[in-house]
Image 1 (cartoon, rainbow, N blue to C red):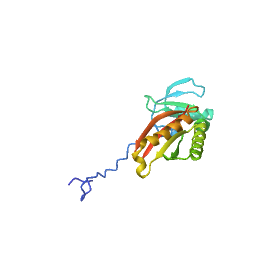
Image 2 (image 1 turned 135 degrees about the vertical axis):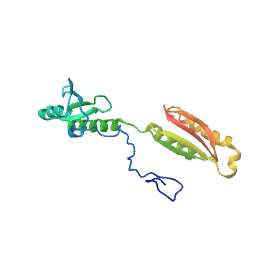
Image 3 (image 1 turned 60 degrees about the horizontal axis):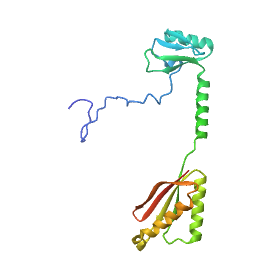
Image 4 (image 1 turned 30 degrees about the vertical axis):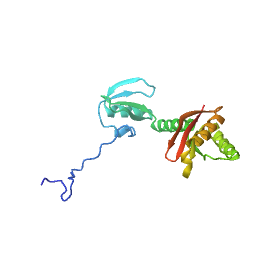
Length: 192
């Protein structure tokens, strides 16, 4: 048997010590002494092209200006580095991410459940809840649940679901038409 393979199992596993492949897009950029590939294309703090030079020379220029040398494009040949304040750069990125998250609106799917023989008052209350969910910008899943022998008369359930859609036509559109799923009928309404 070859050296490095485990014995006694249905699968052979090599123990060569190889590291798993990492996704380079999720890795933070290399800064200052972490940049090892030389020569590099250098971009100045003002955005001007400083040309291709050795890493040590570029790092000396960055230190002279009181800034950091940050790898911008590692895949390029030669790699592109930029002279910038890395702490300020990270702060600005975090700030942009916070602003983007604040402006983001997540649409939730709220569910309102009905029964085929629902009373008028109960129907109005549940429909009022669905209206509020739609006004908040959420989608509403209207579920009509059948019990026992009620499943023999799906047309009664269809009337209730159509009535809900009719009540909410002013602020909702039907995203998915009523359909039977087991012992329930579902329909999804989305805000206009």
